[in-house]
Length: 266
Image (cartoon, rainbow, N blue to C red; front, top):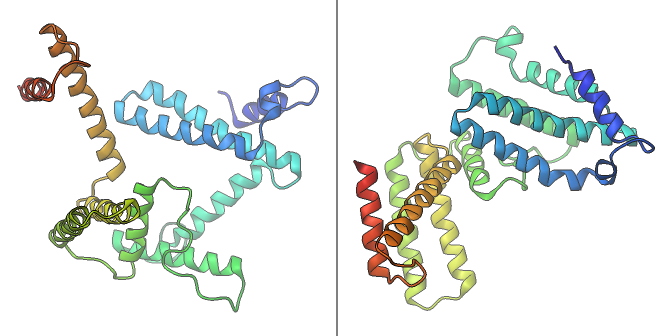
């Protein structure tokens, strides 16, 4: 069975100044980031498709990104792959005292609160004594896509009690934000005001997803796929009727759309 050392050796060879790959030699931390994000999304896509054979391959691609960063860091004398492994191993043990220590096993809610408390202590230790105590929202990465970041901010706030206790009030908040958006539209508001109000609507929708225990990003990806599937069927229906979709009027397209929906429901 191949081990991690084989992959580390391959990465070192790719970055060898004399015998390495020109493309790999050109890369730095920033240039690798887009590839890491792409590989992470490909893992998510493969999981949704249910293809475990393909998932094995995609996980390898994602692991290679970690190896790449570790090699770049090693070349700078910053850290090595072994340091990455030790750091995450120590963190897992430290954040699960109910599993690896003598603490009582809490329920899921108590465990989430314990996890956040430990993370807050870690952040304060990094920043040093005497500094302002870490806030509940500290450490939520700015680089996260906006939709999952909204959910994470809301979960952090909820863990200190800033939350509704049921989905129904969140639905009311969505209606409230829609009314405000409608008012801005009626008043002829500019782009910035409309962007602000629409952002409030989306933030409230992300909050509803959290209360429904639905992954907002996964839900939107599912709807994207549904729209794509149905619209391709609309194009096919119009072609069968001898109509080019480019020249079709909205009434014809809507009729084809309703037909596509009926076909799916059957």
